[in-house]
Length: 220
Length: 246
Image (cartoon, rainbow over all chains, first blue to last red; front, top):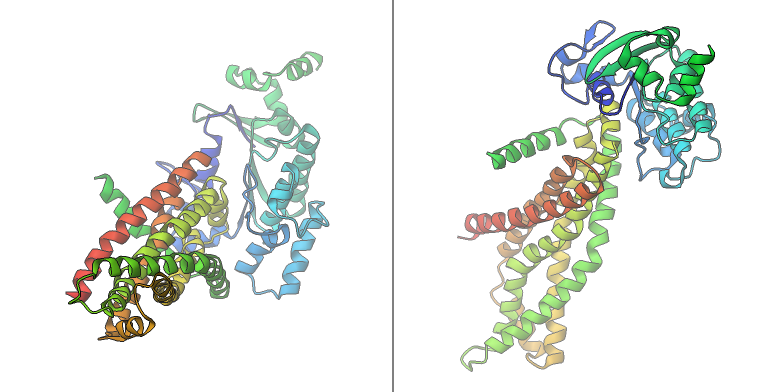
């Protein structure tokens, strides 16, 4: 998990990791393969292994829910129409979205859009899942549903998931390895239990910014 | 320097647009969709504009040809040549630049600001090829059809309104539009229509593709796309006329 204040560079880092932004220095390695030293074909192969959940869902407006999920399957497999539909339905069922196949993104709630985006991201069985603030704009209950879904999918498909968030509830719910970004730099790294005990000032200011978290700290 | 930056980025985008597609069958389907949405969807406006253009040229020609030494059938000649050489390919392309160009720039611009283009890139899809190539190809295939359609309706409009206004007889008009007809003029118009179609689809697509920001910037990209498109069409109209007619 990558956490940090708004404007600290979390999304920029994520976009560098997936190749949407050019990097000025450093390396991005996927299983030892340097993404930025690859040719177009190599990058394309890596990208087929990547699923991404965008902040706003980034669903294709002109396509229905089912078409959105079928889209990557159509582009990269030679499955028949019925097989593609079956795969899409399986993914939609996995994110608990039945009976929404024929709806358009404009007809969906924020939480439903995120679930369709997750279904689309897992449709071609990626090895890596990148999530950019998966619960921004969602109510606390839906946020937990999305967080748990990401965690379940990560374990079920045995994929590496990188989540960007500034929501401490998410960190506590699904955090595993946590990295804190401050003013564009990696400031702190550790586990969920370590972040609650750290005395790093910037991390503490961030983690205990809410009264709820301060109360939690006092209690335990 | 700014203009060279845009030129360079435009040509790089065009090169990416025509890179080998991931799956040809999906691209063919997209070309058909674009022909329907950009081409067939424009038939109505093209027909209306062409009829009125033909009518106005007929009446204006009649007004200017009052000299008894100029035969009345010259009205038909003037309408035919004006419509085939300039009005159908240029005016209709300028109208399509507004209608189709703004639609392309705003569609692609919205996809950019809502991260839909990023989503395509993440999937390993050449977003420029997937989004822009079908629009350019669809436009280049259907624009000549629209221009021929416009020529037909312009000449019919001139005929009907010329008769209604009493400025030309049916015989003189038909004699005029067939008098000294040069098929090369139609070829010239069709060549222009194909070049203009490329500009109508690619220039607004460029503006939409590199939109940054939000809804306001999408609107600005759309406006810029149409304005640049019109300027480039006018420049190429002059260049092609010089190359093909002189």
